Image: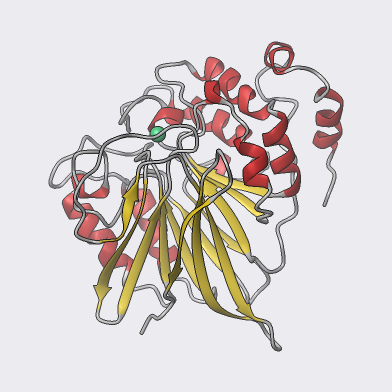
Length: 344
Ligand SMILES: [Fe+2]
């Protein structure tokens, strides 16, 4: 683990209570995100979404106990609807000041994207006037490097190669908010620049597989909530694009305050699975149809773990991918699923 000057600052400050932190720090400027070096070979990643910062429970130690190498935010790390970015910072401080969360991010690297409630407000999109400032606040929260190109672009979409060359997993994190138009048959949730970037990232060869993270659900045809199906032309374009990947693709999504797994054939011999995991602190009674579902909806709080199985003889080859979903209240396994990696 690499200790930075920022961490030294953190160690000193961490003795203070969350209230003191929130009031003493000018925003997140001193940096309370500890940086953990990413592994040479990724074998496990925990992920989740929809975390009400006022409902801090014992879930962070339970997530940490899964011993995943990394933690992935898939949206709604906080609920801060309608707050100006400077007040939004204070809400993030409540998460950062939580002892359990600090312990997690002291042993696991962190990456992530946002959704509507940490971006601006429910179902919000490109119309949000403070999006430049809220981008900075979010990137500070997840500890994005100060010189990261992600801080210079519009929107927080990013691609990350995890692991050493030839043993890499490519993560493609979409920004489903910054450019999003109001839903409709021809509406665009990504924007021209993000589409152009995404086309290049999907084409890229070299990694063993791609994990594409969309805060909102991708494969379902359900339109009763904000999903890709509310943007039908864009959804078709997206699925067609994913089908051109040279390596297998798996989708992760959040938003729905329930968990389910979906499967869709996007081209002959090319099948994509999507694991939806939400929320960490709260859930919904809502149930809906989804013809692509392969694991029923569970309306319980949950978080997920991906386990990447490598054949370790000589040069590691990715052999398996397992998704497991756990209760953040007890750590109990809710269910798991072996995701096929066949891609012909
Ligand atoms: Fe949410």
